[in-house]
Image 1 (cartoon, rainbow, N blue to C red):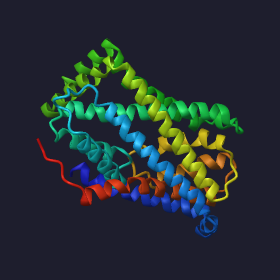
Image 2 (spheres, rainbow, N blue to C red):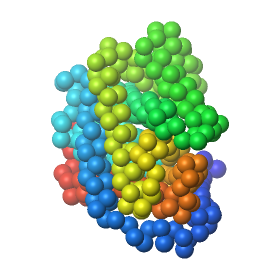
Image 3 (spheres, rainbow, N blue to C red):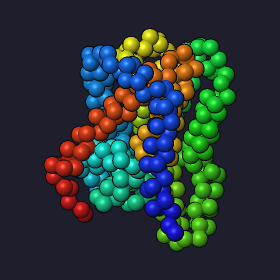
Length: 320
């Protein structure tokens, strides 16, 4: 039996089971009371910040198309359409990986080599994770709340993310690491995967000549993480959560790492678990933390809606 149908069933099941379990722990009636007096002014401010972060996210991916020759680079309108449609598609796919696949595939349909298309998305994801780690480490340092920084799960999350980012970055800046990755790719038994792996390694290595662009994208990625943290803080204020902004800087990056796990749909379930567990360490009641998680996921869905409108009513880009 193919693993794909199992994944299609398992991920929604994980999302539902985690959400139901965390909701049961928090008490549905208490969650409803926590959300009853939501201040819509703070919600409106959070939505405005989502618009800004989506613009920044689109900009950083456009910058990451720098290794693609001008003759092969698709029109800006087509690139933007692919980006926003992929964010909408990611709403219904595993974590953010599903949206990344849609984005890479869409770009490859516009006269861009598959390796370059995948590499641009991979670099976007890598620098996004690095920015989460940078902001999270700084946030934990400045939050100084109880034993947050010494909690084993938090430390492990940062270490795993840092190790993965370092391994991927080494392919870009280290000839030896790139050669090793190329050697591994050429020994993959499936011919199609072997070809794609070798091409992806070469395309990723090309970014080693674009240091300024990578720094630019990293700075934009850090700005996106800061905006997401402030969005969560606005949502917390809407719910009457009194935790200071510094707490959000320490916790939201860690929750974002949890939401990246491709075990559910759009971070549903994992986000509820992350918010309740991490904010519980900061003294926030479970019903309020659960309500905050729901608003945070809903805010992301709102930010993805323009992609849905483009998909439904926008012009279809011609294939080349």
